[in-house]
Image (cartoon, rainbow, N blue to C red; front, top):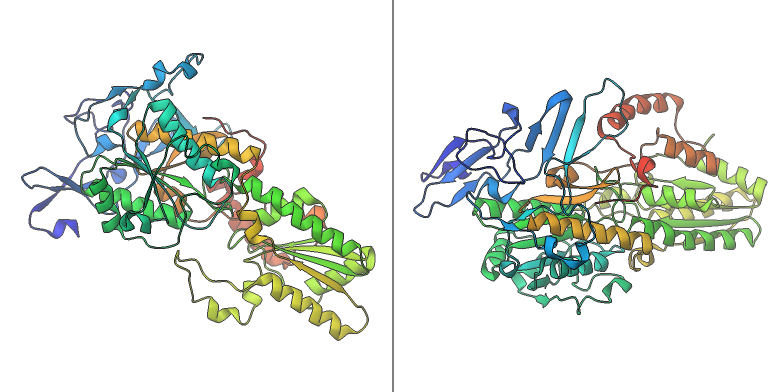
Length: 540
């Protein structure tokens, strides 16, 4: 631990933007007007060497600002929190011809975005996040910026669009011309693979799927990565990836802060499953749902074209069934949707087999959508696989779609009273490998511009996302502390059950139990917030 070294002494100090008694002057972005509770005060560790380098504990406490009527701001770190007397510069946007028509160039320093927007008259104001957008003062001279972009984890529609817009945003809005692409995920930092990125290089990449930088899972060696950042003189790091990648980004930020480096570390959450909490949705999700329709439509055509036809479609959704749920609701051709959050059983009264028989007798065909993580507990062979993980730490799952298809075939072959024709479609890698659609392209642009504004303003250790239709800067720990999941006692899931007419596969007592537990979580954390924000257009 840091405080075990003899050359390091421990002291407690508030963030300088909190404490009106500190010795640092307030900045336009950090006025000294808020108070903080004592239990939210971070603990610093100072390295008293001759160079005056400041270190901090590996796991710093959240930065909390409180106000009247229950107002809580979960703020993000700032470079000036651990590097005193940083100079500021006028924001180049005020001289940018493209922004000359904008009435208000800059976001108000006190603007914040509420996590919960449905409240009662006596409700406290609740948790807020710092609003994203350009600030009046920036903490980097454009000529001094050396930025890098890295993509990690699985593919997702929109990755190239985000890369393009970060590059073009830095170049055209702030005049930053030195931008590197790190090849092959986190490993690329210490493998020394880089691509110089300019607007010309990235001009057409949004029309392609995948990522021009390449990606990988694992390979996170914090010391080597930060050494590489330091050696290359990089002072802005943009990291695109899922919850595992964002955890890695958080560790990189902590190490940069421990070394006292003026390096802004910023993330853009990426997950096709839409299982990142707090944010309205992740980029690429709309494209994934739209592309899933093609597979569902194909399954429906196959099923209705033959007697007792069954179309089974497996969609992505390791732990969260959002793609399957929204694709089912959008299609209206699906008779049964199976997701990880909603347990089901095959045999007996009220089971899946009974429902399939009933549906075939009524309609002569049916379509089943299953998320990849659904029914894993029913796969006896999966007990061994549950203990294995990929390089990102994700559990290796059995193919639930193939398993379910075979179970259905076996069941009806034993009955000898009804022959079926089953077609199985797995569009998994087709869905995630396509370019983003128009809606996601716009969303990716706003995310990229927001993260650039934040890094130039000196914020670090944050990720960006849309919260109730407004873009905000969110501390890393808030998007990695849990996974967003479908709440099966929520109205959106009820709408799906009403659309498909499938049974809930739940015991009434279990429903009552889940309803009590999940309602409390829903009210506290605002889960299933896609229902409230699906039609909202994100704004900066």
